[in-house]
Length: 146
Image 1: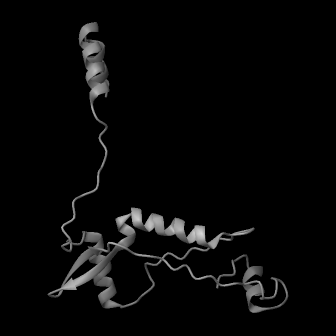
Image 2 (image 1 turned 120 degrees about the vertical axis):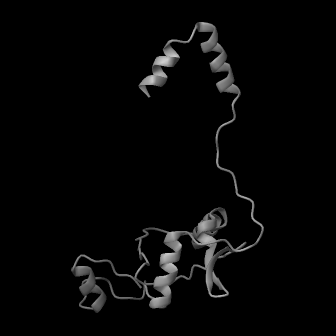
Image 3 (image 1 turned 90 degrees about the vertical axis):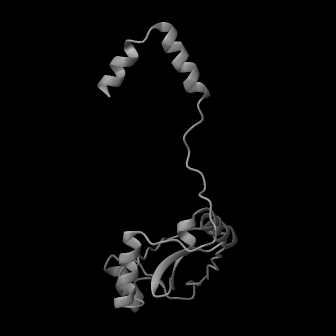
């Protein structure tokens, strides 16, 4: 970086002005969508490892990362569902599945995937601290997840 700064400092005022004008005309280097032919894609090394582990121990939750959030107040379930589905539509990684063709794993990007977002109403449950199993989990500092 020091060398670049030195080279910029040594430019004549005319060359510096020309450089600034060219930089202003340059288009930003953004990552655009990659063309898709609809053909399955090869797995990355990390994906191959996960696929192999799933073959050795099918349906294992080892690499699942469960997360629970406590939402307070009124939740507009429809808007929450729509927000999540928009994120899924925007990010291919959230729509990528593994398929097997001729014994070889491949990844396929689903064109559409819609999350249903089921709702479980916990209001009928007794409040924490009333001696129920859920309250015991809460007393240990954990969250009650259903």
